[in-house]
Length: 97
Image: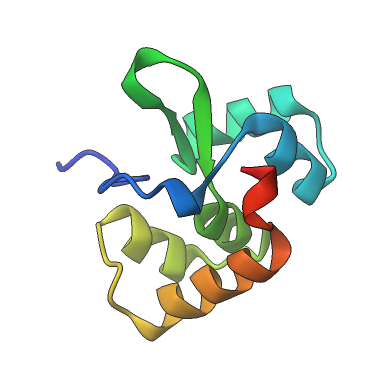
C-alpha cells in the first residue's frame, strides 16, 4: 500500500497551519490535528510543525470521499482537484499561510 500523498509534492500555496485550518473548519486546532492524523489531510513537514492541505480539508468537510481518495492517491490533475484548489485560494489569502 502506498503512503497517502498529502502535500506531496510539497506545495507551499496549498498548505496552511493548524490555527488557520481550525478557523476555516470552526473547530479547535487539536481537532484538526486529530483529523490530519486519522484522515491524512495534513502532515508534519520535515519533522516540524503540522501543515494542513486546504484542498484536502475542504474535501473532508464536504464529505467528498471520492475526491479525497484521489487526492491521497496523488491525483492532482483532475478537474475536481482543480476546483477544490481554486476554491481554497478564494478562502485563504496567501497572507494567512
